[in-house]
Image 1 (spheres, rainbow, N blue to C red):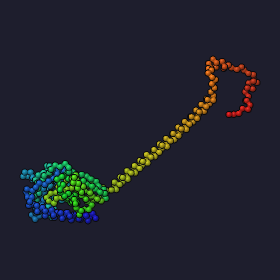
Image 2 (image 1 turned 90 degrees about the vertical axis):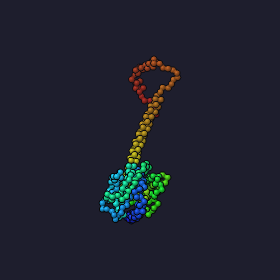
Image 3 (image 1 turned 30 degrees about the vertical axis):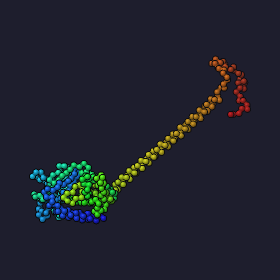
Image 4 (image 1 turned 45 degrees about the horizontal axis):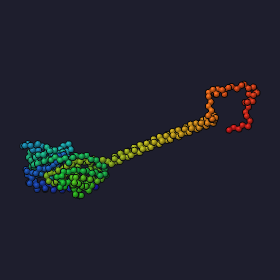
Amino acid sequence: MYRFTEVRVLSLVMMMKTLLFFTICLIKGHMGDAADPVPAITGGSVIINCMYNRENAKTSAKSFCKMSGSECTTMTEEKNDLWIPEERFSMTDDKTLGLISVLIRNLTVNDSGMYRCKDGSEWFQEVKFNVEPESCCGTSEKQTAYILGTAVIHCKYPEKYKDHLKQLYKVQNGSLLSIHIVGSSTTNERFSLNINEQEHVLTVTIAYVSRHDDGVYFCGIYNNLIYTPLFSEIRLHVSDASVQSDLYIVIMVNMCLILLLAGGLSLLLLKRRCKKTQGSVSSDQRNTGDGDEVSSSAYYAMIPDSGNTTISLNTVYDTAHLPTNPSGSDFYTLAEQPQNMTCM
């Protein structure tokens, strides 16, 4: 299915290139040396196309230079790939169409000026470039998506582009391929583009993400003329969903273990507290029982009150006279246990 989709994309790209070729041929005479300036925004990117005559083309490499007085400083030369991440200026040459495409990234105000597309030492097209400050856009962001998941990309665009068709590009094999255009469903069914006109936001949704979706994307204006403004750059990283699920499982297992340990510790502490409480109650009951016996004994051992008579210390000593020594027989008689006494 993915292979079939890629073939359809490549076929559409070839059709667009052919249409671009005829369109540029029609407007080339109109542009001449006094072409209208190409608009762009700071922080954004732009694709500039230069058409040359294939029959008269030289075998020397093509180049793209910036004018400064009578000098033209080379910014980039013909390479195999249009997209070179470590360079701001990249260029590719489609010899079948006679078309040079130049990609300029991370634009600044200093990039404004006059540029020329050259074939060897001769130039064949001149482009005036105007970069305007814009704080809303011109961002380069990184985003992560998961296999079989859904990726949502938000691209904010300047108000001046509100009436232009928006589209999504992807860097593939060093070239920028048109993936989807707003309002179109023939390019790739997994991609959908929606626009919030009030907030000037283009939302890109990618369904059933696969490994092939990993890469660099550009949100830009649909323009089949001499230039194509790009206002956002997104580096999408596709990660294996199993990594996320494994991490989730590990987190859940750890949480369960923590809860089990906490529950066991709480139960142990509660058990020890209950034992301690029971021991304290038993001790208090024993102490209370002994005290009651003592109190009871003390109660029954108390000398009954004999009125308000007070006993002085002298009286105690007076009544404490030692008895006279009885006779031996009387002593033993007194020591006999009384009869008919029952044990209480």
